[in-house]
Length: 246
Ligand SMILES: [Zn+2]
Ligand SMILES: [Zn+2]
Image (cartoon, rainbow, N blue to C red; front, side, top):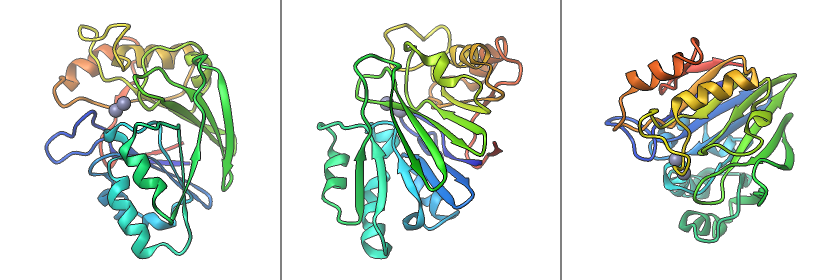
């Protein structure tokens, strides 16, 4: 699998940046993971978005799905077949309502579970096996574990600590984890992990690589990296344009 970082900020972009969005390719499959603001242009420079195998959304917060809105116009103009979007059901989402009104999209609800961390959904897209886990976030949100030819990518989307988190990330070849907070700004009730907790998750789950993402432009990346590397020396921060072979 090949993972390209399209955008990695949250909940708003840095100057010239983009919020959450990633492109995952493997064999015949080409899947976008989230599509936050600024990511559609970057995606389009790599592949025509109407040819994606699927779009997997972790949740409907705007920093993860806002570019679905101009994507709708693109699909209506260019798509020969519908695009499959997988996302947790969230009746309050305006973007989801727009998606439901688009004839060029097939929307699949992936169910969150009230018992956090319990695996509750599994599907396959063009040779990629996708497992869905419930995240802990203020709105319905999920984490994806994607496997292809024995390799595993785990993308947490937005989450704080949640029961079953270590099992979810167990032996991942690459863990792409929300690590927004510094140790001084994180608390148990916040909507995100800290960079140090993301690194600790990688250590406890024995993930081969850890990439910390969902970086808030208002928080110092040097501090985040220092705190993460105190736990996992090989921790890195996501950067737009970076490519990882998994
Ligand atoms: Zn977010
Ligand atoms: Zn969120």
